[in-house]
Amino acid sequence: MVVRVRIRVSHGGRSVTAVVLVNSSAESDEPTVVLRPEVAEELGLTLDSFDIVEVELASGRTHSLISKERVRVELLDEEGRVLSGTSAFPR
Image (tube, rainbow, N blue to C red):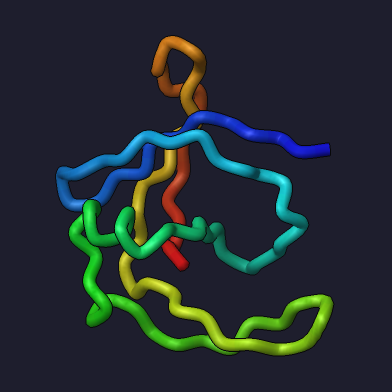
């Protein structure tokens, strides 16, 4: 079953609101959020703020970019009110 929720991602005084998929079956030791390159750019994140890491998938290993800086991720209700929040590393 697909679950989508509205979130706001914030970094450095900038924020982006989007409806996102939350049950991708991915796991990590630290909270992470996958961002499209144009969203990362809107938040002021540049390639210099990312490291290349090895990622283990069900189909094998691959490499991904993960930010050295955390972003704020907030779960929003239909009215845009914050229900919950955490910090996460963008990928």
